[in-house]
Amino acid sequence: MTYEQARALVAERIGGAQIGPGEPLAVSVAPGQWTELARLAKEELGCTFFSFLTAVDWKDEGLEVVAKVDNLGAGVSVVMKARLDAGVSSCPSLVPVYRGADWMERECFDMFGIRFEGHGDLRRILLSDDWEGHPLLKSYAVDTPHPPYR
Amino acid sequence: MEIKAPVPQIPAPIWRSFKELQEWEALHQKRPEGDKHSAAFEAITDGIHSFPGGFVVTTAADAFFNWARKSSVWPVTFGLACCAIEMMATFASRFDVERLGMVPWASPRHSDLMIVSGTVTIKMAPMLLRVYDQMPDPKWALSMGSCANSGGPFRHGYHVVKGVDRVIPVDVYVPGCPPPPESLLDGLLLLQEQIAHFHRTGRRASPNAKVD
Image (tube, chains in turn cyan, green):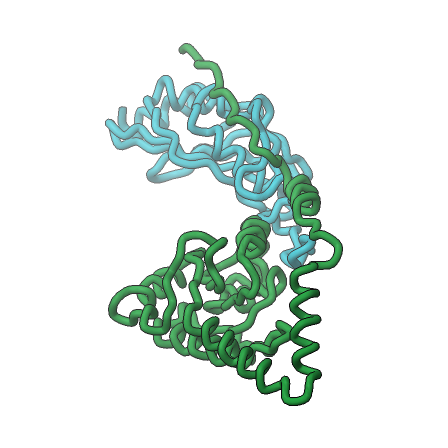
């Protein structure tokens, strides 16, 4: 598996995917194709190593979920991006495909408030259970009071 | 491809949320009405003090007790962040706080001093308060480093308590990021100075000026 083969395979299988130039392979899809892309990356491209999952807050343009998976044997990495619409904080979960996505999606929910549909155990992982808001959103005020220590 | 069943959930702790913890602590920290021992002690010492010439006895006793207190301040080992490395260096042989009568002790129930060395997060603050509450009176607290003094570089973050004096009363502030062992030693000597003037009624000396 090389980058050329991977690029051709993704372009063939995932219709409407925006594939960026260069390496690693950056693929941007709609949230509806998110699980499909992950399954393709794992089973066809051999990217079995789930590197990380996080999100970007583009303010008015909505959130973007970013995940990187690696094929360590062939040296092929795929950066998968799912662009959510403005005001939407719901995304399909990758846990049925990658078990390693479990805690990372919990952290992403903790920090960005993105609800991963089909996760099964989506609760806060770093902050306390009674925390209000999601602190890595750009709209979060850092001076939000947290009684009784602030 | 076969998908394995999800991992079973970790057993629930005694308290699940911060609110439950607060309720638990409120339930278990209710002190009895009127502390009889200290009331009797106050009556006796007040009686001696008001007797003609009795102040010599009480002030001498105060001086003796304060000398004993300041000569055996045992800090509870409570390291939170990188300041704890400097605290450990202070405890170790090169700077050697044992010559001041200080033994780093691993139980809050035998300790007199809490060195808050490092960043106190909002999630950690209830645990810090619990450790502090487990220490017997008289007890002192030393805030070490910028994070514990005022939040330090994380002052504009979302998760850090902006100064440990919002959680517990602090006697000595040691500035620095992190403070070198010499600074901490200076703070400990300052604390000993405070303890030497500890009033009979248990009133605290005011803390030194806070530098962020």
